Length: 434
Ligand code: FDA
Ligand code: NAD
Image (cartoon, rainbow, N blue to C red; front, side, top):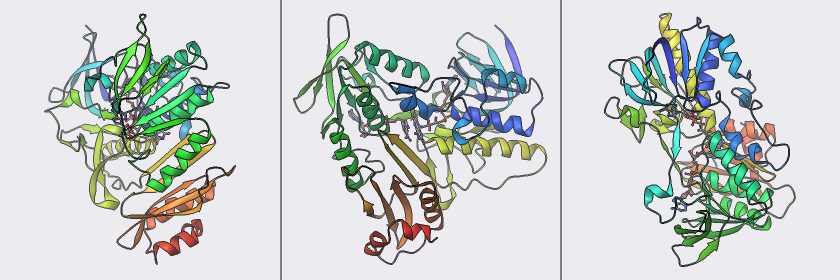
């Protein structure tokens, strides 16, 4: 069993890892100082592509096209770029044991990796229906989507079951993006989710009504208020039917499940302070253990604007938290410091010809503006959230670059709103004036 020592180890090979490596490289690391250890077989890439361009029937995105950090217009770090920058990229290597007191990690193959500073960037894993004991949930062609291997299985199944029937379980990000992707690939798609409307984590009933009608117009069938309670399979093990809790059943050649994710913190249980399901950090992504940082999906960090601790499972934060942690590490080495992380939450999604952006906090009362008629060829509408008389969140479907910038500004500035009616009347021009 080999033992290797590094000054810095980034554990994980996803979005945060890519952006942390980029920041280390731009600040300067000596050859052999930094290792990125990932259980994936490929160098860090922009994960959002997997549920969008990767599944296009034509002109699909493929690596090396979307390695980090192209998603934010940065340098594309190809596998060989790591070597050129003196960074050791250790792929197909799962860490199965972490001893934070001894500053060592052990891989599944038994190799030992020692570090002086560790950045935990293990991200999230999918929740599985088998975890909830759903009968038949281990049948073939019941698929999940997190990593590129999962996306390849989805692509294979799309080819194998061309034009077949797909059931999408879950009405969140994966549910909405994958239903669209399967429909574009000519599948007969039915979405099933338990809530009264899709994307309840963010959407109000009004916003959701637009997307549900738009999807229905595109031919996606939507079944709400129930869950998949069991699956049956053909004799070859491939799924053929989904049973719903409300008694209905649906034929299926492919099932995609997107019922949420959980942060990968198990390696560190009992060794580091946790909060809200993630690893607790300060505004520099330092954990309760000296020389250990946590970034991206796994970090529960102080969201300065709102004065509370949050975990954010979106790509913008994974990039920015990684950069912040590396900047803080490097500044501390030089006896300096960086400013506290002052994050403005930013989420987005794209499906069919739609594209929305959201900035801020979706709390308080909400109000819709613009044209939310799903039958219009170019829908363009938005929403504001108002709490204690101030606009705290802003959403827009079909916004231009300038309009999206205005959303960010209004969510950051949190200006007073005269009334909800006034916001509806003013629409995006309210944000544009900030
Ligand atoms: P990430 O999951 O990217 O990386 C974690 C890495 O750690 C993986 O490489 C994993 O293999 C590795 N790892 C974990 N445990 C390990 C171990 N024990 N040993 C070795 N390696 C280990 N967000 C958004 O804002 N807009 C969007 O459009 C999308 N779209 C999107 C699509 C899909 C399909 C997914 C799954 C997610 C999104 N997201 C998104 C969310 C976004 O991608 C997510 O928040 C970031 O990828 C989080 O970055 P991290 O680096 O924290 O985790
Ligand atoms: P999610 O939390 O967005 O949505 C999960 C959905 O499944 C919810 O609507 C939930 O109520 C529903 N659900 C829960 N149990 C169910 C059941 N038994 N049957 C049917 N539905 C059930 O999670 P997700 O869509 O799985 O996404 C996984 C992760 O990937 C998240 O971290 C998400 O942020 C990330 N992601 C983000 C984007 C984006 O930001 N555009 C895109 C894809 C994925």
